[in-house]
Length: 73
Image (tube, rainbow, N blue to C red; front, side):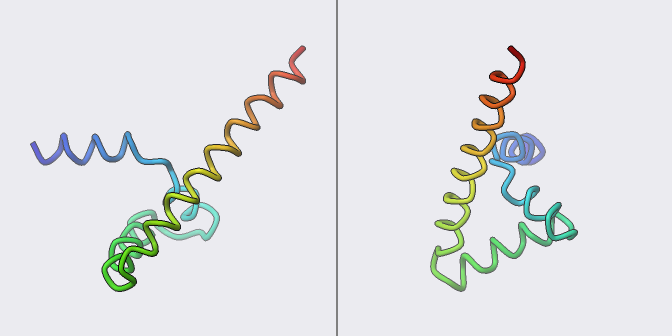
């Protein structure tokens, strides 16, 4: 049961922690723990940052797809 919950959240995540970990050369678990702990301390501000980062990454991914399609013609 617990493993299914973890798998669900990993599949549904936006990849923000993974992206930040790759850019900063850190482990993904440290970035995730940072978001969790700072959310409790900063009363949810990191959640807003996470959502905005997810939107930016999604738009960047969408723009890369469009750019690839244009140049494939």
